[in-house]
Length: 282
Image (cartoon, rainbow, N blue to C red; front, side, top):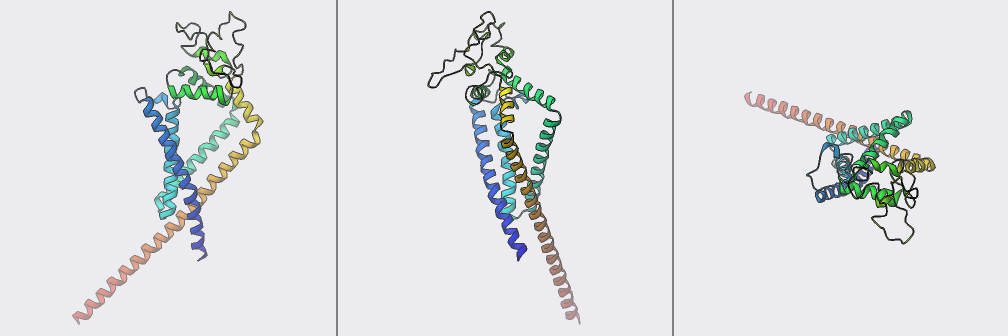
């Protein structure tokens, strides 16, 4: 009786957490697909996986959808295959997260260089994807208040903003790099000519610090908060893996017992039938 109550509690916890996860995956997946459809699939390529926010949302949404679906319906219907898939996928994700964290600490320079290279790729592809452009502008102008990866001059890597470009945006930075006072209306041309070294005052009015330094500063200043969130996520995943594994083992045992009972009943019916046939012959 106690074991059955324990299983019901586990089923409820798994169902509750994973129905939320599943619905979240559905929402993120829908948003990603909608944004990608609005943008179009004509320029979609393998290299756009990391540079397109829509593709990233689709991948994250799909993973959450599959994990939430397997955990939710596996617990609700006590389906051993779904519970097994859920535990395996969650374990793989957990190992991947631990691997990334360990790599970031052990190979901090290489990790920082990889992250910096990814951000530089965003700068290069700024005009190639409208969703990426909106994301970069939101990060620079609203979230982090920064410009470029290490500084404004990083925008020289973009073919349009480079000073050797024939485009009218040459020697410029995006408008999201401009410092704004409260209530000031955004001027999309405020970054024009700011990379022109012939004018010593050209960079006045734009953010001088790069986004990489800002992110590193946020992590160092909120190290305990980041660590707490990471540990909480780790505990949540481990707990769900243990609950799903325990429920899967119980379901497997119950299914095995049911099969054994059915097999025994079948054998007894067969033996009984043989006895009846023997009596009839006599």
